[in-house]
Structure formats: C-alpha cells, structure tokens
Image 1 (cartoon, rainbow, N blue to C red):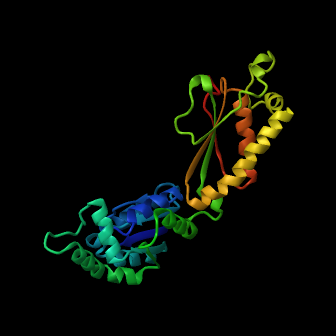
Image 2: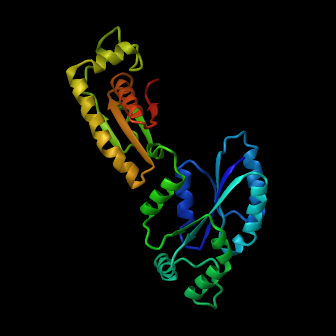
Image 3: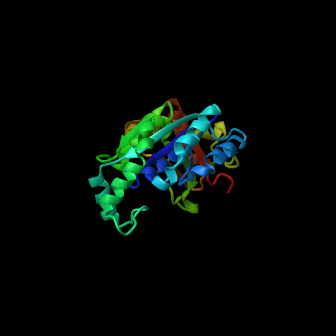
Length: 284
C-alpha cells in the first residue's frame, strides 16, 4: 500500500514550494491534481512495479479541493496511509506576497478585493483545514525554514541522506564540468602516465591508486580535503541544501583524479553520506 501525502492549503501559502522540497526529499510529486483524478493516480502508482513508495499529491485552490475529504476517506478504506498537510498564512502576508509578485489570485473574480478573495477561500477550505493531520503556518517562514521543517517531518531517517553528493573525476584537457560546485586540482600528485606499466591502467586499479595516494603529500592533501568536507557538509544539510557536486581534476581524467575521487567517496560513506561517483573521462 502507498504512503500518500496530500498537500492542500491557501493559494500563495507555499504549496508549490513544498512540492519542490518534497521532490528533493525523494517523494514522487504530482502537482495541481484535480480531485477527480486522485484515485486514478494512486492506482497507476501501484502498477508501476513498486517503484513509487512515497507519493505526494498537491491539490490546487479551493475549487480543486472540493470533494477532497471524501476521496481521502476512500483511499484510506483501501488500506493506504494518507496524511493531509494544510499550508496556511495570514491574510496580510498573502496580500503582501501577491502584491510583491504581481500575480493574480487564482480565485479573483474582478469584484472582490484581494483581501476579500483570500478570506473567501479561507472559508471555503475551512473543513479541509480542520481535517488536516498537519497545519503549517508559513507566515513567518523563509523558504529555507520551510524546507528544513519538511525535511524533519518527511525526510529520510538519516539527515545526511537529504544531501545528494556527487563526486566526479575529470581531465582538465577535456574541460571543467559546468555543474560542479567545488573543484580540486590534483595535477601536483605523482602522474602514473609516465610509468609505462601503469599507463594503460586507470585510477580504479589498485596499483595506480597506491602509486597516486602512497606519498606523504597525497596523504596530507586527502586529510585536509576530508577535514574540510567534515566541517562544511553538516552546515549544508542544516541549511537545507539538496545537491552538491565536487569535482576532482587531473590532466587526462584517467589516473590521479579517479583515485582521489574513490578515496573521497570512501570517506564520505564512512561519514554516513551516500555519494554518487562519476568518472567522466575514464574511457577517453
């Protein structure tokens, strides 16, 4: 059975932001879902081979939320775990947000004032709010604070899993990857390219790894890099950052950078992170 989170609330209170945050936390998100399609989406998610374990359904404004409670009762009767999260905010704050973004309220009728439209929607969704398992008032929350709150409520058991780290090796002669956040240049380390026995091998081979990492210089370098990561990564997690890409480059991207990336990734795993490893130029 599915673990389903239904996001409802007032227009402008942060439904779309919450949807993005939950997607970063590994939830499969369907945004602006009409209630009439709720059952069908859940049914299709169950037919996907079990790949969708956590399903987040974002229901739109008050018009879209009509009938949501009956649909949720039906899903629960089928054995699904269904939770409702309602996002709220003060009328004054919602007015400020709409005026700041110059967006039109989706329920605006050209007659009521913006404040009147917001109050009308608040009345229309009062029953949904009363039935919610969780109500979050976003009036005083920054986007980072909302993300942190959602991570605590719906994120992985280990906070480190919320930060997706990629460690990539590359060769400078093929260009620096455009999506890296931090780059370490390891061209100062001993180069196996000049050893005829090691040249055909790669940094994945133990002989090359020992050659590159066996010196005191390499040991000190790795110690300082891993100490730096130990210092900053918890702060990235606390800030709510979702992605970090660390690049390690040598000349060709086959020997030194590969060996260092493998060593850095091993350290990160020991620190309870789950890094993704990529060797961009290994086969060139």
